[in-house]
Image 1 (cartoon, rainbow, N blue to C red):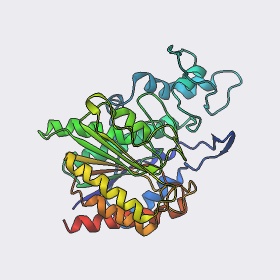
Image 2: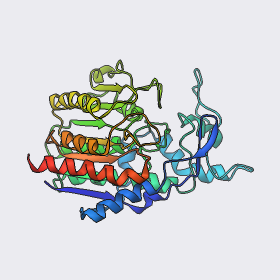
Image 3: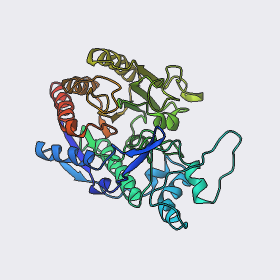
Length: 353
């Protein structure tokens, strides 16, 4: 079993100080140290680490709208050129029912392309989010090209809340969706069935990933997350959301009661993995969040550090080529222990297959 990792230091360049939460500006927990902690751990473990090359705009354009990509690339320079505007983009208008126009003004575009106030844009955001997308793409290409059975993409900022044309929840480009779409193209080019499964085990529902693939039957999206009636994104992630059109039945949501411990989590995961096996994908993209951790500041679920090892082993039991894309996880002091536990479980299970 070959397990590799992909990184780029530019993922650390996005460093807003605050975000808007519960009516006030508070320090953001989505900090560069999250990526650095993962990089340092993998370096100590001796895992082969590759510097992600520039994959160009095509993988991003295969997932996101041209309008969103133009906005993200140019937004900050246009924003700070406005007299009296701050150094950080946080919108104060949003699209509502019956509002169908697309404005030219940067203030209005900021609201059009945002689903909430938790994805501020600063001067280095574009460099960081494109680097993260490149990391995810290269990890997918290592796996589809046969260079690795699994590849760990150290992505930051996370991506699973970013939809086709909107940012939110600390997310700007959907790294997991970009990796999955690129993998589909390469599987087809290699004469393999272009079918991918995306398993999202972040604390929060991957609403952006669901949006991107909701009407498609070539991607099975499965998400385990804390009950959205209690936590972000609140408006999606319910069991009744199962896809639309050709995609009906290809979205599966497992909203878990707040405080679910290891046993309950693993029971739900076992059921989810059964659905992935039945789908028989050519590749698995894992949106790996460590915020289900019992010590995470978001306090939604109660997965322990050893529990992440069991999760890793269970996922490895699928025996699928796997792209592991880093999502959330904000207990930075515990991130290395949780990641190490996950990788030990994953690698141990792979070695017995």
